[in-house]
Image (cartoon, rainbow, N blue to C red; front, side, top):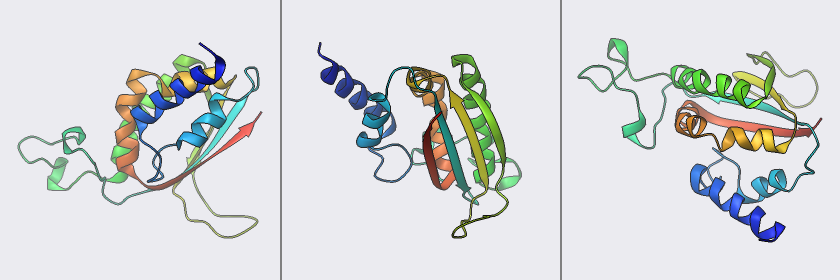
Length: 164
C-alpha cells in the first residue's frame, strides 16, 4: 500500500470515529491530514482552549450519565459542562500518560495579555514525542469512548498545534 493511500485510510478512520469537524468539536479531514502527514520524528505540542457549557449537551442521550430513576444528575439538575468535562478528563489524562504524552499545563483561563480579548474557561497544554504518540491517543478505544463527554461539555474549543 502506498504512503498516500495509508494516510487517506487513517484520516478516513479518524473522521469516521470523531466526525467531520464541521461543528468544531473535532478536527476536519484536512486538519487530520496535516497531523498524519507531519514529519515522523518531530515533537508535537497542542494548546487547547475550552469554553464549557453551563449544562452538558449530549448528542446521543444514551451516552449521558443518568442519576437513579431521574435521568438527571444528582440533585435533580442536568449535568454541568464542567462535570461532563471531568468525566472526559478522568479518562483522557491517564490515557495520555499511558501512551507517553504529558501535560505541561492544565489551568483555568484568566485573561488575555496581548491581542484581542478571548473568553475561555480552561487551557491545557500537552506535548507528545511525535505524531505517532499523538495519534495513538486519538486511536485509543478508551479515549474515543470518553470523547463524547468532551463534546457535550464544550460550548466551543480551539486547539493550536505547535512543532516542538
